[in-house]
Length: 225
Image (cartoon, rainbow, N blue to C red; front, side):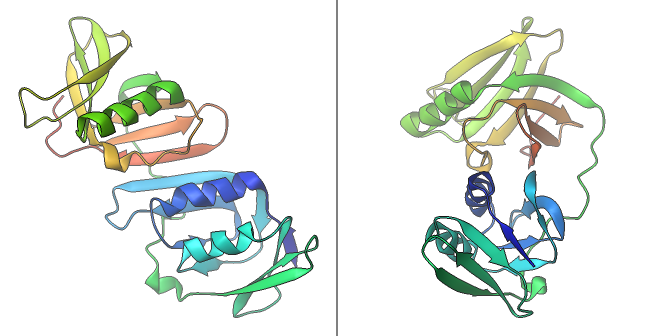
């Protein structure tokens, strides 16, 4: 049994590599990953259907093998390794399966969350500007706050009252709140707009508006409502 691999799936794997260097692909059409610290989880529904479990310890090697192909095709015939074939170059690679117990894997089901405290839309344009500002100012705190009827998101250093700040107004709100992340935890796929919801002041759900891609990202523990 074999399947072809799309560029979209390869892009998702590249993104998931930034969350966890390993991946345990489960049977079906959903890729999922969980960070080592278990504070970032992601799920992406793909067009391919994996017929069996594929535990890959070094995801970068798997991605590298796929990049060597013009039209990668996965052959699942071998019980101990995944064979990657390419009809265009008449080449093939073997990637041996890992022990699944060596991999921190995402749960089979989506993380259940309570009703949202706050919801907003975050465009890739705004997110990329926040990322650039974080790098330019050398600050790592991303804070969403509501005050004086407006909802804003900014990058800053919460421990420094004179920190440089870059902020973007997201819209109106009747609530007052402050929820904070670490920028390093926003390992989101590029060129996507996200619907974002905050749940119980502990976790944020980022849902792509254009595909079935979701991230659950833990908020910083000193976040306050």
